[in-house]
Length: 174
Image (tube, rainbow, N blue to C red; front, side):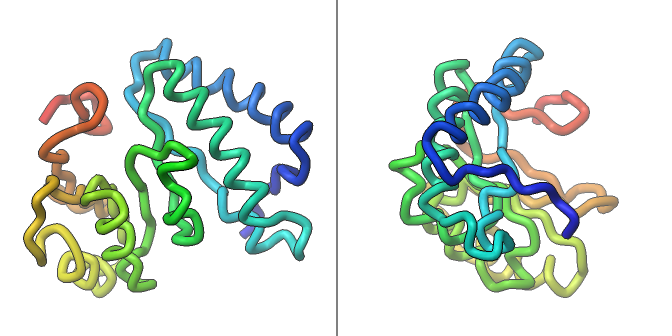
């Protein structure tokens, strides 16, 4: 994909990286954001064995602790591999790209009680995602949030946000 890999292979390296990213997290809190979602926590999949899910889970825990200390919610981005560790890590919600395409939407919705932001890029995948969670099944915890770039009306707010009031990308409140 051409994305850089952060070396999370040792506790020392994770700590140094968390200080850098932690500054960005603090900046988000200072700027009035309500949540962050660190990307590429699945980088072990393309590291040729240099990184493991355990390395990135430990790094994610450092980031979650920093986000919560700053009063921010933190979201898991993609990868179903970390779903079983979500509580241990401290994730509050999920942001998933193309879960309809990879048939993973239900896994995220079940794990996060529908506190999921779904991003789909193709009509077929968007339709599959809608059938698999949120709009296609009953939910006792809230609604999954749907976003399709360039398609008005596909962004809906969760019924019960965990921290603060959610806002649309342009700052408007639902």
